[in-house]
Image 1 (cartoon, rainbow, N blue to C red):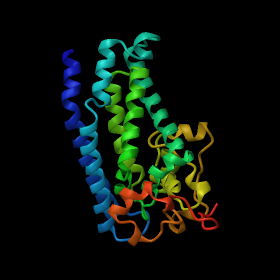
Image 2 (cartoon, one colour):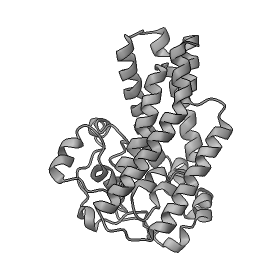
Image 3 (cartoon, rainbow, N blue to C red):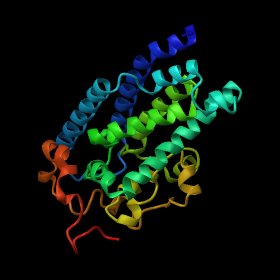
Image 4 (cartoon, one colour):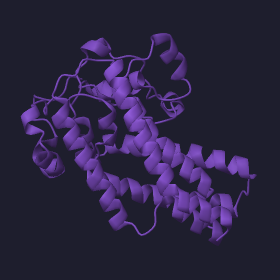
Length: 282
């Protein structure tokens, strides 16, 4: 293992934890100072649930996976695994750019699958049952979804063979963008219209959390907005506007039934799907 590889691997935890904490604090303060929407439910309970789920997920990922994407990228590089190491051999800068773009595309396609495959939606619905959307929502994913997502990322790293630095940058961007685009933060409309050509903005992603099914099944991107436009899953604005739109899943709107134990057991209960005649607005 080269000195550069050792440096990347040793610095990964500090970079990821540091960027996570900094963005959580920054966006949290932004939400207090300049919120986009008035919250409909108690923030204390939601944040407790979402942060406990986050800590559980982080612990279990470390427990279940002996190697994470950056470490696997180092192994793939040393053993010449993957398309970029065995087939095309692009220059380093292009390999890094390709790695980030392809991994982001994989996450987009994974997100679409978690909405359209009923078994996967059972897991992903936990994320969408948050009755408000703020920075903590970007951390609220069921453990089994996190495990499957990690398996998909690891398989993608082996198949593609991106440089370790590309995987590290991608992981930091993915975590940061998830907190940013779920943030309940105000960005002026003119700036938002420009930014959403470059990154997924909070207004763009908030529509994805609408109770209306056709709006929820759009704007799947986490960081790059181009896949939604390319695959025609982009929707500009919610029908009722951002202030009036309802957040959540229509048959899970009772806050008292969204406790931490219920969220953890939700994928195993029948009511992840609507009763006949009582589904979400179309």
